[in-house]
Image 1 (cartoon, rainbow, N blue to C red):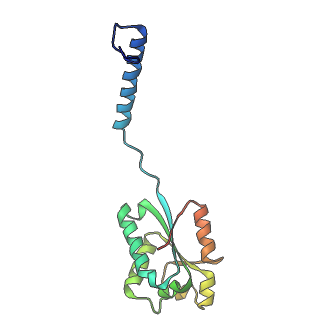
Image 2: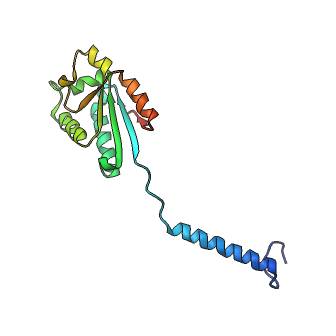
Image 3: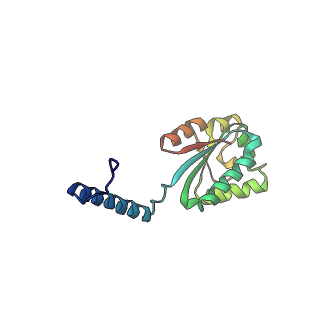
Amino acid sequence: MPAGTLAGPPTKLNATAASALSAAFAASSAGAATEAPPPAKLKVVYHLSDLDKVSFLVGNIQNHLDGVGGPDNVTIALVVHGQALRAFHASSANPDLSKHVGEFSRAGLELAACGNTMKSQKVGLTDLLPGFVAADRGGVVRIAELQSQGYLYLRP
């Protein structure tokens, strides 16, 4: 008889091994029957500085919200600086972008405008689409703060 088999006359060792094997299968079956706990609510910061990527990024955020079942299932922050901030000037923003920004704001997304960029473009919060807050110490500083709080970084 090959070594390591349980065949042969019952012995105390074979009975112990069989009991251990049965217990292992039972535990494995019980573990498989229970569902894994739902994943923790993710926190994500989107970084936008390129004017030509504004529509693409807005689409990404909308797809993200739709993909997780809405804003209750994810925490999203958008930090805008550089030329991209021009797209969010209230006086010149396209209507579709204005609509999305309003929806994002109502859904509780943080919309942060770089304070340094606001100064260089000579705009205040009242000049931007409603819902924005100022990242007074700068957009990249705000991104780093969010990352230190466990936010995942995404940049299109």
